[in-house]
Image: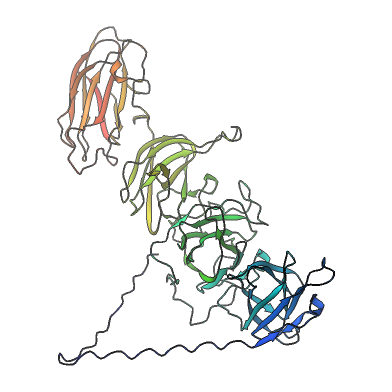
Length: 626
């Protein structure tokens, strides 16, 4: 699913050196659009039954005049009849603009043929109001009135045109009126009012594959695997966090009944592209066939597009609903009736190792046993992967580096279901955030008991000014997550073990392994010789690791119960050659008591540009009698 890069070829015209460059002929001026015919308002037209008929593009010159009694102000109704009689099964796109007089505010309402109100727009002098393209099937009604009873003349422009099959079909403010959206067939729409909601439905075959909607025309179809070109879209696609409230008709629950089963392999992966609109932050919400929420996001800045590359389709997927709306800017939802957006969806076969979005919660986690590929996008995306363990195991996890994103990798257990409301938080077992953008993150080894555990990939929090935010994403480059499970035979360090209190216990004759990572990692081992009647000679041998020098320390004996401070155990001996891969060794006679062995990366021996620890190769520490 890599983006293909188009190569633009520039043709250069060659001429003689002595020839002067000829001036390009001026482009012919575009012919001015003819003014629409004018129509005078005809009273009485104060009710739908008296509505003045309009059957073609025209400008109506109207007047809201005083009416007696004053409690019944004037209102003007117009019947839009593309077929002329209101019964012909003609379909047209209606666009209307009302221009009230200076200093007066009028309103314009649109009704369908059954007098169901479709929208209501306030109109002010100088700005007017613009009705977005509404699909008229037989007949529609316009009502011009003043909510305050004001009077004055107005101009009403009514434009009728053949239906635009590449545009949304208004009204589509409800799921039941959703505009069908074929695959690989971009549709455009407009946010005509601050409250405008544009619903689309993507019909799917029972296997989540081919669409049931009519196929696109050859002019708009794309080849399989192509990324759809979207007007106003750029490579810097930067979506943002989820919107808050669910739309009317959608019942949000903690665990939606229609949530995809993580055990089932997706049958397809959808790419969704929504172009930006100048001055607007667009919101995009996605629902399943039962209108239960699956995913929600919004553009980061006004004019930014939104792109999703990894929405999973499962064999049980029958349809998807998509909602496009205006997201708040400083608490208000602006509109842009004259600036269209473009929405397109493309389907690819689901790779066997691809993540399955949505997987932003442990309940929807993607199963992983070895490797997965995914995208950390849109902004605020969190990817959970479930690791099932049948016996005590050690988990090694690594996520590849991402351009423009400082990734964070962690291992968590789900919240305690018995905890009170607001107190249930997932239990963090290990977190890795050692590198920056484009650098991998590694969790060397986490001991896991039998059961389900979760690996989480997300953007790390970083400071911007006075605020800490998780606002990084990369919708063009996938990451790779690799996990390895190995048996926990009891001879591996148990993190955290960075102080005497949490030291990993060892015995004479044992060899234990561990990772010297990250750079400030400290691994403490405890040898209890309290039951020995006399001192004993020991040899400590530490096998080096390839990427960084290691330090081996002998401390003790402890004078009291173990605490958090290593300095409570006096330093007896150190082995530190300062060379990566070099073994370290200490010979000593230990009296009865509790002794500590410490392994850590050597800060003094670190080579500039080299890592401060080694997350890929474990060291081995052996304790033998001498």
